[in-house]
Amino acid sequence: MPSFISWIDYDDNERKRMLEVVKLFRDRDTRDELGIGSIRDAFANYFFPGTSTIHTRARYFFFIPCIYKTLEEKHVSSGRIAVRARDLEIKLIDALKEGGEDEGVIGKDVGDKLKILPSQIYWSALSEFRVRLFNGTKEQYHRSLDSFYKRMRSARGRDDLDEYKNIIANWDPVMPAQQDDFLEKTHFKLTNDEADYLKQNILTRHRDSLLAQFLIEGTLFESEFPWEQPIVKNVTPKLQNELEHAKNFSESIHGAAILYNYMLSQKRNVQHMMDEYGEMLKEWKQKISLRQQEFKNWYPSVWQSDALINGQVPLLTRTFVSRWFSIVFKNGVIDDIEKDDNARQLIYNRERRLKGNRARLENQRALEIWGGASGTAQLSYRWYNAGVIIKDIIEAS
Image 1 (cartoon, one colour):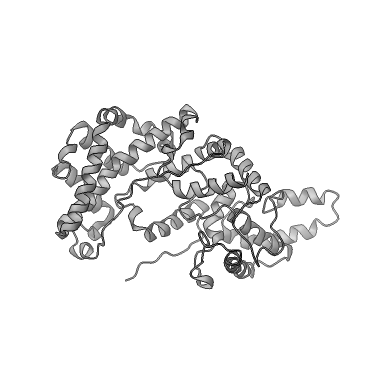
Image 2 (tube, helix red, strand yellow):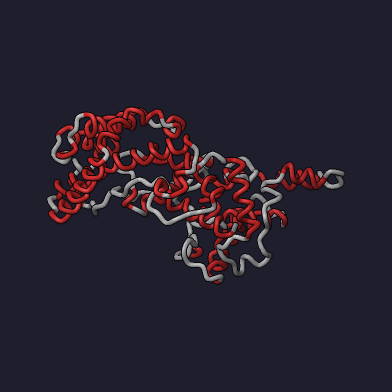
């Protein structure tokens, strides 16, 4: 039976998590094979609130509300709004192409067959940055519009009509508007007003975040991980501490992901895969060995991280991670980690608990269809996608 994901009228956070799953399935190298996604997301949300791995460019924060404001002005009914909005979001694809855009255009290759619309992808973030004032899911917003129009009609003649409109508005009234023909031809480059608007909204709501610090500094350099950026030397001690936790966790848990793939390649008895993951393990061990004592001093304090305290990491995930750290740092088996029975059994048990009878290390059929590179990328906590948004804002500020 083929797998599928059904869209239900969940809250914004649930919708965002489901969209993240879709993205991760498309990029197998970053899939969460060992069930540490709650830790990854806890750090990512702490550093880059409102962002997602399926966000592409910052200007969608204006395209989407402008489409809906246009339809609200025409009093499009609750029964028709979904279809009309979809039509305009599909039209936006061609408008961006006409404007010369290629990278980051959602639906570029599928056109009107697009299943997950930009409005679904950005819905939660639009509230996070206070562009969207309506408090609810997109479906709830659609259903509310008939009542919204009724309230507006009944308010005609009020002395304070303009102020009243602002109070009950679904979208921020002071948000910069798009040109009237933006659905004919447009681009991703933010205007100065748009960049300033996003920057101020982010600073107002998330000033203590790493995202805000990049916007304050106004500098961004190409790097694989956020802790490699020069500005981290200037951020608050609290952020520096959280970055240290995130970096150490990323580097140390990476070995578990590599070992998992090494064990799969052994079970498949594919020599070139065994060589590849064996070499990756060797490089990982060399990196960890350079800071072995530092890691040993650090790992008992990992659960004191504010990001992980607020992230509600499940107990079984905490147990798995703690046992991995104990094997690697406390018991000192890093040199022979690929041969260590405790490490291998921990990986085996973790996959079995997560996947049941679909676990590749136990299910021969699941193993046969494994294509390699399952979650071998080191965690960067949504850095690439957040970096694109930051770059868009900085370049236009």
